[in-house]
Amino acid sequence: MVKAQISSLIDYQAQNGTWHTLVDNLTSYEEISATSAIGYALLKGHRLGLGPESWKTADQKALHALLSNIDSNGVVQQVSNGTRMGHDLEFYKNIPLHPTGYGQSMALLCLVEALNHINE
Image 1 (cartoon, one colour):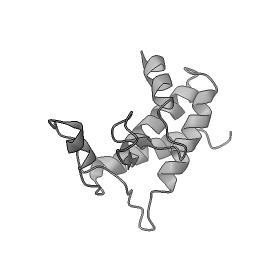
Image 2 (tube, helix red, strand yellow):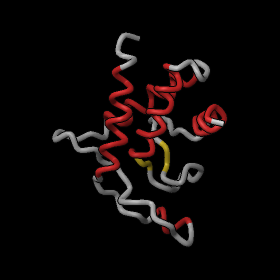
Image 3 (cartoon, one colour):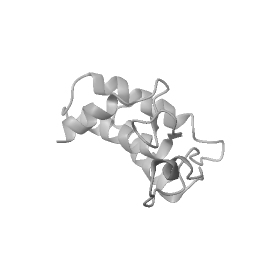
Image 4 (cartoon, helix red, strand yellow):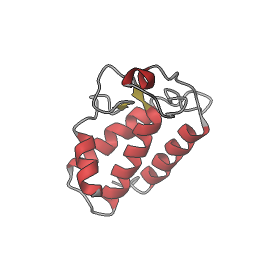
């Protein structure tokens, strides 16, 4: 199931390495905590040999997108301020962007896993 989900997610990755808050809706904003979480899964899956070589390309794009959204104070930017239940897709598109603890945590997971790939 993990292989199928990750492989499907790769199809929705934006050129700059991010994923949109509504994964299949290009009019929704690009969101870095989700990008970090998916990047982490790609990096770890690649390291464990779970997926094809295409995962490596996608994980590197996600990692670079994450790094470009960490400000000079180390704060992860472009993070949705929560994804509580909404009644329609517009609700999710209108959630403000705001640095959050979970955004930092997802970024740390991705960055720590990236250290396992430092010699590649």
